[in-house]
Image (cartoon, rainbow, N blue to C red; front, side, top):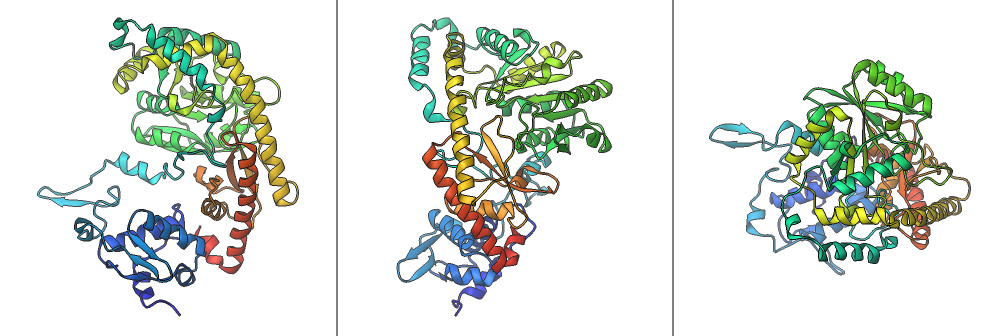
Length: 515
């Protein structure tokens, strides 16, 4: 029999089957708001997870996830053998909260003497809609969070020695403000490295040191685009790039992909743009390498229209068959390509070092913009990175990591085959730190991702990266950050999640549709 509080709880819950936010998170937010607004009073017993799941037509894991989060934050208390209750010790200030006040400032308005006013700008409100924090970094890497290198394999002792050596010999004169564009020897080393390994054409003056790829994309968006300008985005593609362009007030235009990369003809049918954001060496997240003919076609489009191309070369160093693909920037003889690189994947993300390579006419405006965004990047990490590259540590580390990541990728594919009982459909395995596992039509990727999260496995759904509806379901699986044992365990949990999502779909069709 349903608990006597079930009808009251149901009145507080309004799940949106078409929303991008996972169902467990919607339920968590609705219950939290009901507690804060005193619809659910301290000490009130809530329905059991099984009873509420039955009433809402959800899987029990979905309700468990919401209850666990509320309990962890102190809103609920579990009593062994008795049930789950609204916490007694909520602060009086929280118990007096009404409505949505302070909980979702991007979607509500407040009143003052001057009348209604939004607490956020339109740009700020638009950013919250992108759900960029849907997959937060974990304190400890776990299967299969994409975007992380093998932190446990980084030569930290060598790095520590280089940093210590620099600090011991650092003159007092260097402790003041430095150039906003970066440590000159590092810029020289980066330019030489890009010329040798990526086929880029650049001078040290064109290299601008930044605090990672995200700052680079944000700088490009604000320097080159006016509000209302259009930006072509790969679809599916990197959501944080879209966020940077929208923050600058640009209109993002999703452009589909084919086997050769960004479909330039499809982009033309959607209207020209002032910039195109691409990941040509290893498309994120599908792993496509843009063909030479498509690269030339994209360059021709930029030359014809006066548009810019932003080339994000985020993990080009990790190619397991043949030599790394040359950068698109090296083919550009008209100065239309801005190149972005980063040390996050080849060293470690917390270093926060990346670089822009801009055409010569853009050196001055980008240098000025960099000085506004960041007066000067931290000096000693730049010095240590210079030494790491110049003394050969970088090349040795890359060789070791290519071998390690190829092994971990192989373990992942083989583990998936064992757990799935046969061949699996994955994206290109020639490069990168992640694979996309394509699912059959019976497996909705959002539902599988939610089921995997409940089992301690992060597997972002491919649909999370897409603006338009995709023909395929899939999961983006990072394999670089965890060892073989964790990969095998993660594959087993993932197989269970796929089976669970299918089972929920058969027993509760509305659950899969709502996901």
